[in-house]
Image (cartoon, rainbow, N blue to C red; front, top):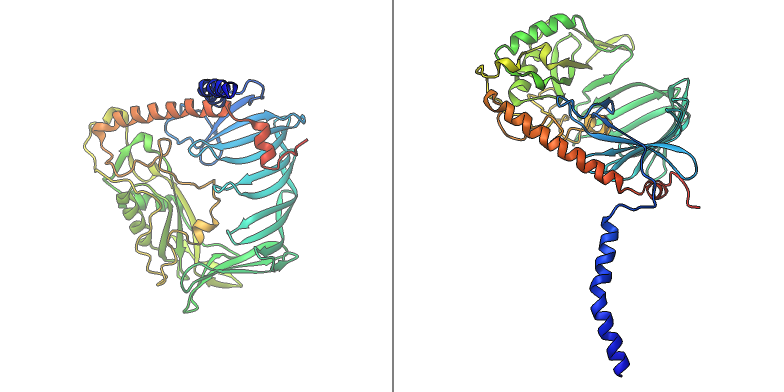
Length: 407
């Protein structure tokens, strides 16, 4: 009994030290595992950039890692959520081998292959429009759809022929017609059987980009922002049969004030558009328009920051105004545009690395402070991202995502 009591006391005394030792081992960087060999910062379009470029938002970190099997991989991580976004096998600096793309739920979304930097062979999108499984091939860098199935396994497109249809609103449906593996045209139909074409044989035409920019400058006269806000504004412009703009969906805007005036100006344009052609008939169709912010408004340079300006509240996300063309309000969040956008290339986030500033006013008298705060937060996130990447067990990560097999 005395022996049992003795050993029991010894265990109680040593248990805290054992627990502390385990905790320290978990927190410390593993000494035996290999880490990445290079690090690049990417913007929201996955383009390489300098972290010191504070006029753009940094969204991703790309690292290069050589696995124990001798293969080399590029891995891209979301710096905001730490999620693994994609894995691509590389050779001599080019994409060469298997490619894996994951969504924000950590599901494998797309799997395919590269050869000498070019997409090739069989590819699979496991969540095409979040509803289907799409199988497609690449031949001479051209995508050809072969099969589309529902998540339940029902085949709706065979040998590149057929129509995809699904509901996008209470009374609205989206259609895609494929011929020979290529999207021929797509359209939206509602309860009244009104049809709006997104893709046609001959798209809607903007007759003069220069004239449109000159017109928008007049519409936005008096609105100014500091020069470091330079950005690209993207939108869908619905052009009817007569070449009039009947609706505008802003995919990437800026402030509520600018968005309202921009949409109003576009809807008042006359004689600058030409309707789309489908089967030799003029049909209403979308024109994808983009313009740089300072091509249509006058920026305030740093030396003029004390100049009085209009106070504007930045929008919290994509804006939708005066959408009267479709009575069912098709253009709402989670609509077809949100479905069609790539989940990563067009992500709009609120955070220290993005252009969103919450609900605060943009004023010339506090712009210097705002820039300093952003810079400090970005440098903090940069340091934090590096520390997290050093602790990643890349070998185990690739195995857990079935990129490489367990030995």
